[in-house]
Length: 372
Image 1 (cartoon, rainbow, N blue to C red):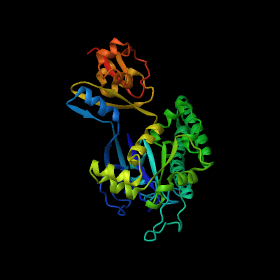
Image 2: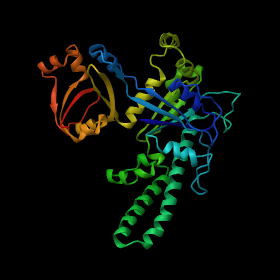
Image 3: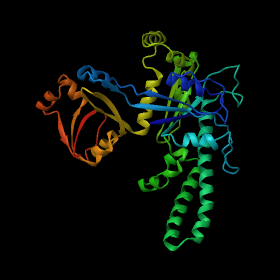
Image 4: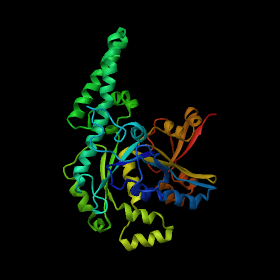
């Protein structure tokens, strides 16, 4: 899973990147020609740790998330009437974030006289609306360029190719109309076939979006109040809000585990921000984790919720998908209820045999039986 961190200028994007990853990327130094900051972090999963106590594996492997600190989005720079400019959602920046599975928009809520807000005032709700428009403008620019090419190719095409081109033109026209009404693509009622047909465009407003409200330390005590105020009246599918004090969390990320726990307790924080952000991202993307266990390795694998067992086996290795016979499945909670013993789980009827189309659930422990 890759998540691209975006935001308007001086919103604290790189500070949030450091907070989520424990990196020490230089803040305030981004330009359109800069390389993106990249870091991979483990997905917190206490189930892995508990399973490892039972199976004592040689390796313990968590699922991972890659964060990309792509850079700032300049207001108005992606308007379709003029085309995307390099400093906005275009060029290298567009290339970096279009490949991501989801977007994390850092929204400034903190006051800082030494770093004035480019708009002259701090207004998170306004900045959320601005980013939504910039994502839509980027998609409109792509659609307009594609429609111009389609007009020419449809005119010259043979009958069968012309029909396909006309269908694409009709779909893009409908999507364009809704974008102009400020309806992001993820909120448009596209069929599964239509969604598949536009996947190659990697539209930004189609991606799940997490608005992360970047607080000052003084705002942490009223984080929920701030979040409620910013998100009030906002209702878009596959969109979520959360809060984080990037500066504090970045400092916490540099501490060793024991110091980190003590610091969080002193601040009255029950859960590190990185854990909450990953959990929300999984929910937005409809992701789940299944586990494989044994003396060699205990490992978490990331899939879409309800992925058929045969396809989930392919996440481990393509040979397992091709030669799939069936899967032995036991829920993590059921296995732990009998002391982590697969033999005991089998004896109590908790270990099941499932076929190719079984929808794999979060926390399933699977052993794939297959032909070579």
